[in-house]
Image (cartoon, rainbow, N blue to C red; front, side):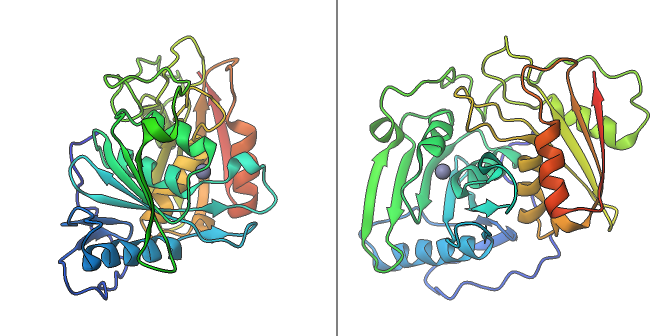
Amino acid sequence: MQASARNTGSHFPIPPLANQSYSVNFIAPMVAQGLPALNLGVHDSVALYRELLGRAQQFASPQVSGRRVGAIAIGQSGTAYLGANIEIKGTAPSDTIHAEAFAVTLARHYGESGISAIVLTLQPCGSCRQILAEAGSPELTIIILNSETTAVLYQETITSLFPLGYTYATQAQNLFCHPVLLLEAPTSSECQLLAQAFRKASQCYLPNPERKTWSGIAAQLSNGKVYTGSAITISGPNPTITPVQDLLIQLISHGENPNEIVTAHLIEPQEPDYSFFRNTEAVLEKIAPCATIHRTQA
Ligand SMILES: [Zn+2]
């Protein structure tokens, strides 16, 4: 992964912010650079973050809850990553993507070394606290802004919000900073999608190396573009971000329609400790029912 955010050259139209006090540059629909640090004592600063949270909420797909949740993860580079809840009616509750997980995963995709803060419209659930505890910094600040007023509801570190958390993560090894996995390539790797899924699988976060749970996915859209995802296996491990969830986050954050997936290829180990194939099938059946899904076990 590359250090600091890169320009994706997104074709997606990005309307300017209404708040004229600051200059913010969107390099992708959900990625903004030039953001000032949130100053809770300055009205315009709080108003800017509230507007960004509102923009994040526009990307939500609350098919079950009807509630749009927004998040802004601030990367160590200063770049801001928006996140929203993605719910897929008819799938397992664990297939839901929470706004916090979305924003953190997006920051990871852009090669951040960690996040310094996350700004939210709601208090994070227990699963998201577990994910934030594996983001590498005990000083990571969680800020909750009231969507109705400019009042700040909460500002605290993850350590205060999630004391005695259960995790294999350390400041040296966490979901942002970890070694690339050395995997044995499948013998039938002439398929381009399989090759990309395999390369992505090597970027899995696997804090407990005794678990055989690595997995990657690559999907081609009708416009020919290919997007990928890998497993982010949280210590818990129930809040784990699955390869298909990582894939959806990449698609949605680039302004793509997941319904346009034509073919997807998932790769995982022989006899994995956790398999991601059934949940991938279930999710794609709902969002891209015409897609063809392949699995390779290596
Ligand atoms: Zn959550």
